[in-house]
Image (cartoon, rainbow, N blue to C red; front, side, top):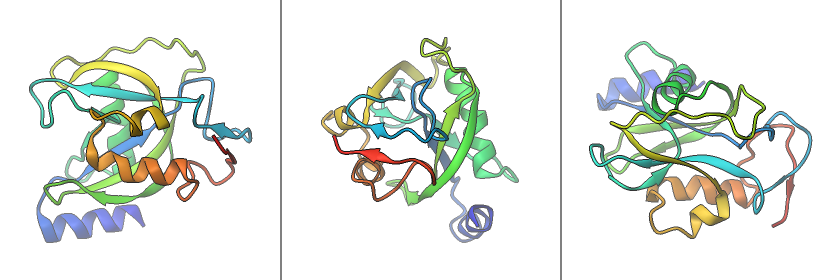
Length: 171
């Protein structure tokens, strides 16, 4: 479904679509049966560099989808390019639009490393810094990119699960 929607959107709008993923800090995994406590589990966030749109903003890693590239493949490539992290892309979380109207495909993903101190290598042209943050702390941060807020709120509220088999604890 996501690939068909991607092609249809690109054919109509001719804008470069993007793909983003929400990745919990290892050893947490979206595949585990243990519940997330969003007040304790941290997720990978980047602070955008001065040379990209919305400089200094906090957001999830991701980026543009190349022609003939599937959105989930773009997420894996962008994580490796932007922060040096290999991820296994999981559940499709939905599609939103950027402020410019470009389609943005959202996924959950897991780090391939189980090390909570996995070494990250931010690409300085796009990423000023990387952080591990809880979702509630992001919602309270004025630097958190506005178009990321809706989906994060839905995840925290339990409306958009990160996995089909994941339960959530109330914070």
